[in-house]
Image (tube, rainbow, N blue to C red; front, side, top):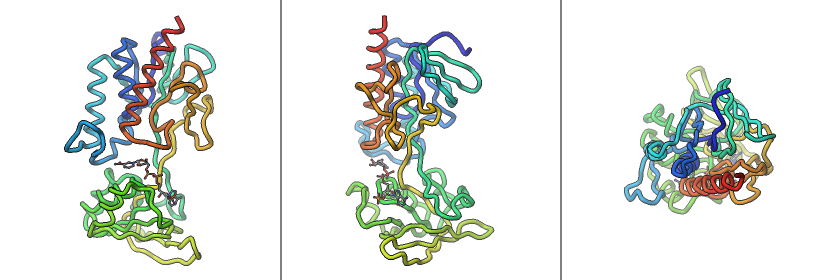
Length: 309
Ligand code: NAP
């Protein structure tokens, strides 16, 4: 057993988790957070954040996460950079297993976010980390003066493509249709960039490689099945995310895509378990909305704990 029963354990550490931690700490609930080995969530993989209010010049994603963590820790949030492996929500106190230790808590706030989806095209597994990536901020610098493709038509694809122009000689965005989910401002920034080309109605059918790594891809037109080859030494997949809920082993109600469902305010299907951020939200998925929901979850947890006494 790790220690006595905590009032609140927070699982996950993006904007939702740190904001929940800040509010729970200020409510004197002495929260414990398991931030994960890769603490900070997806913002750690983001370059400039230009749409979080309060930063007129923008802010680097990792810097913002460090600030959020420091702010919550100042009020007493205890953070361990470890992954939660398993939980038991069948009775209270809830049980949480972390690297062989067992922790117990009267309430949980789940803020584990979401992770990038891979395409699953032929040859992909062999080239992961050898030319194919889902994180431009992490791997972009490996492709100086090389040709890169970015798959997707959302904000992530536009952001990654624009970021990659810092390194690449040319970036081609490959999208499966000619309608873009990306916001207008991000689409225009990418489409007007002299180093960026956009190819619509194309899907990756197969990755091409030699012993040195990726050399290109076979693209298919979904309208008529015609194929063509594109050469590139780097490819970045930016086609969306899936929620991180495996450790819950189906103990909370989710929708068909695995996003946790709120039953009342931010409470999940098990009373005393709350959820916030991208693990719940497939509509907005913004740092600011995740932070707002983390605040709501902490307030809901505090009120629920009070009602139990
Ligand atoms: P998204 O908006 O869901 O876009 C995913 C894109 O990938 C879509 O264009 C989709 O095509 C395409 N796609 C999905 N599955 C595919 C497949 N199997 N093969 C080929 N293409 C596929 O995801 P996102 O771009 O990651 O953005 C998610 C959220 O984060 C959004 O709310 C976005 O605003 C936000 N975000 C914001 C910023 C920012 O403001 N700085 C940056 C990044 C992300 P279809 O359109 O044909 O389905």
